[in-house]
Picture (cartoon, helix red, strand yellow):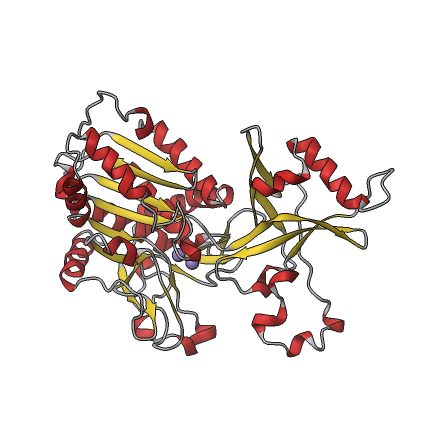
Length: 458
Ligand code: MN
Ligand code: MN
């Protein structure tokens, strides 16, 4: 076994754990795409990044080294560090998604049954529904009111907060349930979140529901109808934790894909010297449901922002936009399935990433006969692996499990439509899409090193 850990100096090991600490803080407080965007903007502004909205149509002229950002609907964002060379020579792009599988409250969620008040949900992304019962849950999101105000919701994270909960059937009465297929053990309509049992005095009908509404009114000033224009996500409650007796791993919700989002962001912020080509970090929403919508990778958000940036740089044409995109190189920073000895039957070992062996590269993802994948160009992969080798970055190649075992996709094929070079390069995860996923700190560290090397040298 080629243990990467043994190659590290004492300083390296300290850096690995320090990165782990910063990442855990991020993961513990950023459980929605909105929270990630707010965090990144806050950090970037502290480093002098400026919102492009404040510069559009001004006479501001871009200089090499400038930090610029743009956000879309609070759920997608892009950050640029301007290079010395013209944008039309292409950019060095890191892209990750910041949405994670979860349950969203329905537009009309609240009801009462036998003195129990529930919030009804619709799950988001690919989940094993049976994993989301009997775990402490938190509510994160926003309520947008008719008067234009937007109230932030965050219940279940503070030690003094209550959590909410979805029940499962007790084993004693589960004779029939235990015979069911895993996909049917818990069905979508059973994912209702228990939120109260105390009735409101003086109410005959739905008194517990009425009491929940009065609490919401008191805390958020909301009426029941305000759920119509709310986006409230039900996510696992609690902080990310060190995992393993040796503290080598991190257990938490949302590693997919926030481990890549965080490490790409740090890689960009840490590279303070003026780059040759413009460096870009793009964070997209909706990857888990097909990259659709105004904040997903398929939207024109990124293109539109880039057009504005080009206008600020004085090359305002659709040709300039196309050239910039087509001449760019991207790492699509997304997670991969880590080899799991407990489920060895679905993996083909030679092409499966293992914990502790560094950045994971997927030349292609997809399913069956490589359906619907970006298959990265060989010449581009040669450039990427040379940079990784030259910068002493540990990496490993990956496929999504055995041929015909299933499959998955990323945003890579959408970026590829611009004609740019793109390859998937991320971090291996155990129990992907579960309420508590696990990654290895070494892989987080090597990924960040890889992203730093990429934005400097590609
Ligand atoms: Mn992902
Ligand atoms: Mn995913």
